[in-house]
Amino acid sequence: MHKDVKKVLVSEEEIVKRCEELAKEIKKDYESKNEIPLLVGLLKGSVPFLAELVKHIDMDIKYEFMDVSSYEGTESIGDVKVNLDLRSSVKGIPVLLVEDIIDTGRTLQEVKRLLSHKGASDVKVVSLLDKPSRRVVDIQADYVGFEVPNEFVIGFGLDFNQKYRNLPYVGVLKDECYQ
Ligand code: 5GP
Ligand code: MG
Image (tube, rainbow, N blue to C red):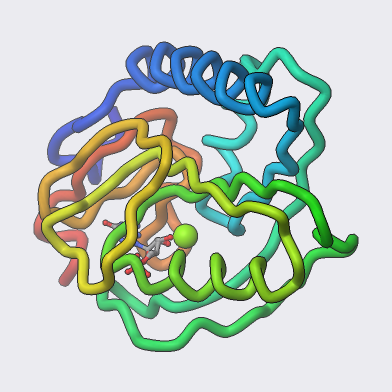
């Protein structure tokens, strides 16, 4: 375990197993509608999760990335800013947004609105983590890996000041790391 980590909340093994389950669910749902989703990962946090998830989705899917920002330090701020937009049109295409964590829900609400505005036929969400206790807008992921308590988490894509994204598990930092 990394020396700055106080405890591991979700292990690598649990994440891989859950990705297999989510991938099966996603395939079943989209196949029943005769659709293939375009996966859109939100940079940078979703990268390890997207990479693990797509390995297990047994369909000819494609994926793209968007970069929006709504977070500074450890507190969420209102509006999202689009730093990197999609390269191709999503008009008439079912989109499956891939997120690292849903906290207040503001980011997701804005990005969903944006993609609908761009003409996506449908926008669904898969999130590795969900912190339902922090929600301020009425939004839910369609697929969730794990629920986490109201603690600031890092690892498997999630950062603190851009660090710890490469940890293969989700955990909580020692208190002294915030000083
Ligand atoms: P929301 O708009 O739902 O409040 O925030 C979503 C974004 O905030 C996430 O995509 C993530 O980048 C960041 N975030 C929210 N909670 C946490 C957390 O516990 N740890 C880290 N590292 N980032 C978080
Ligand atoms: Mg994010």
